[in-house]
Every structure is written in structure tokens, then in C-alpha cells.
Image 1 (cartoon, rainbow, N blue to C red):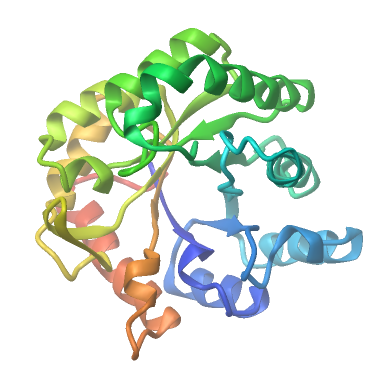
Image 2 (cartoon, rainbow, N blue to C red):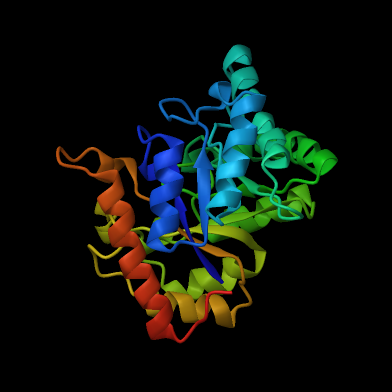
Length: 280
């Protein structure tokens, strides 16, 4: 496994600064966020900027394991859905443009919707996801669906059913264990279910049980990363463990995106050492 950092926690940080800081800390890779309000929003990434970012990744020896393109797949407004699919498919194209050798980034998204919509909207979601996955497959890019608290897919069982219904090797899971930890599902249970079908991960820190919970920067809370890493390895996962800082944390008056990355690296790199797991 390797250690990555998501620019989700750096919406206003120029990509040059983000790449330099993440590399100098010692991370192995970076996830690029392309949604609105970010310095790397998709519409800003013309061919010149894509080439420049690709050069920076090579210069600073950072892999690009994933692209965060989170856009709802359940919007029934035609114009909104068209915009969402433009971003998601654009993420697929960007993954090709920024490919590092034969390593192609996965495109991460959450599904949208609400948990109670599952029974009535499942078939609609499967159709929408299938269209996106078909496009990803045409370009050799994997779509990574992230189960998320408050979304239509909020449990391991639902995302496993989605994988079965879509039935494509180009649909995998972006496994953010925080969304299960805050509802009290044991780490071993979620890791054993999802590690084998995951292509990418997010880790935060978190405290409390929903609805009375808070997301934190890795190292600020009680989550046992050593246990988590050992279980991920034991269940066959060999990809990136990528730190993500939530919007909840970013809303703090004194939030410092570079300091958050530094604490994340200190916490997670130490956890790798204490778990006896080499980053390779």
C-alpha cells in the first residue's frame, strides 16, 4: 500500500503549492479534485494546464491514483444532470490526459440521493451508473463509487448490490471508512466487505456516532489506523490510503490546509510504521 493526500482539503491552494507541499511531506501520491470552488475545477484545466500538471507530478515523483469528480447521478433536472455527467465524463478524459505511464487514475464520485430512496430509485441509479461506467470502460478508466452517510448508498450492502447489478470490472469502490465508523459498524466488518472490491480509499478521523458526530483531521480523533491498515492488508488491498479533510473541518475559522496535510502525513506515516507495513 501507499500513502496519498486528496486536494479536497485544499480548495483554494494553487496546484503548484499543493503538489510541492504533499511531495515534500513524503506522500506517495495525490488525488486531484475537479468540482466547483476548487483551483483545479474541471473547466479551468485546458490542454496546456493538463500538460503542466502532468509535468509537475513527474517532477515531484507523485502518483495520481484518483480524481475526485463527485457529482450526483440522480438529478432529474435535465440541465443539471447534463452538467454532472459532463464533469464525471470529463474526469475520465482527464485521467487519460494525466496518466503516469500505465497508471490511470480512478474517477471517484458519490451517488447523490437519500438513504430512503434506495428501493424506489435503485434501478434508475443502476442505469445512470451503467452509462458512466460504459464511458469509462471505453477509455480504460475505472469509476469508483463512494458510499456516503446521507446518500442513497450509505451501507456496504448497498454498494455491493450496485456492483452486482452493474456487473462491470470498470466499477469499483472508493472506500471511505469514516462513513461507516460514525454509524458504529466495526472496522473489521466494513474492511472485510469492501477492501476486496475497492480501487481507492479515503481516511479521515472522526468522533461520535451519527447524528452526533464530527469529522476530524487524521490524528485529531480516536480512530485506530494501525488496526485499519493491518486489516486492509490482510484483506488483499494494495492501493492508496488517501487522507481527506472534510468540509466540516474546513469550516473552522482557523483552518490551515497545509498544516492539515502535515498532520495527516505525520499521523498516517507513523501508523504504517507501527503496523509494520512497507509503502511500496
